[in-house]
Figure 1 (spheres, rainbow, N blue to C red):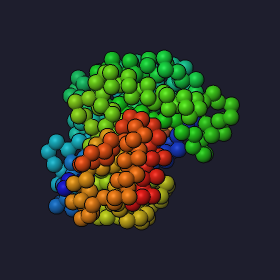
Figure 2: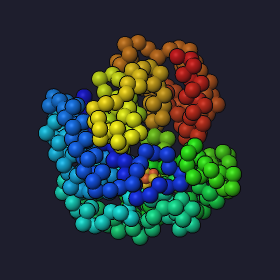
Figure 3: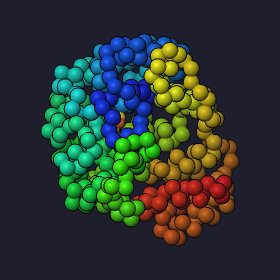
Figure 4: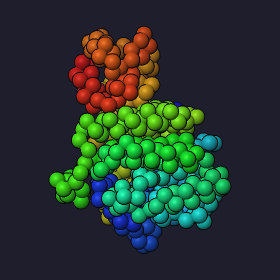
Length: 368
Ligand code: SF4
């Protein structure tokens, strides 16, 4: 089975007040050293027998790393693995720093999918998030991407923002939909320790859990009206434009992760690189063992995030046994409450179940 490669590019123009992803300020000499380290790490994992059907540059703000460096990494991956025709190559990007010229250049080095942070189409919300882009930056990037042939485009929107209402959320959805894209990811604002929002949280007018759940339901319904299928709790696509990289993750499939703070799941082991660009540059093949991956528990937990849910035949093929009766009985209970679908071949959470997925999944797992 083909696997994926995830490359973490930890550079950002500045730190967003809600973000706890690992990122540092961009500078040329650091980026050159980081590139050299990425190439060494790619060499370390190289295996010409390994089929790759997805390469994902996540961040951070990977477009800051420039098309030239991204192209060099793609070439190295192609020289090191059996990269299949039609491999999905995704670049996460932020519109304020993505020029039209660079969009063409990214396309030329092989990028065929763009994932951009819109977050909101309301100026006041963008300002509160301290984002650097405007709606027109997004419009320009999408227009150029389509002109040069990058048709697989995803936008991120955020739910649970300060003073967010159904009206303001609808305005963001309408704007995203007007751009004729086929994938939208929803991010629930989480106030993470160590962020500026965490310091200021008591002064912020954040929606409570009930309102956030209402906003999420509204979001899912509005997207459904526009033809987007919610294939995962936070991800919606038209025309089956599912994110290949993310599907691998939720289907508990393997991927090689490379870069500071990157995680990977390879040859049965989950591993991670430290959140330190200095350490990665100094020692690109030093990563820490996390756990053995692919357990029954992990598989059920991840698969229940997907609309397709846990398919009994796949479970049987993978674990050489049936799913436990105790768990199925518990699933029946949630079906009666209206949170879950269950028939002779699968169990899956429905829209109502997605809203309380953490509670249901952790409860079901205690019945394994
Ligand atoms: S641009 Fe993205 S990765 Fe960078 S600080 Fe902002 S939210 Fe975090």
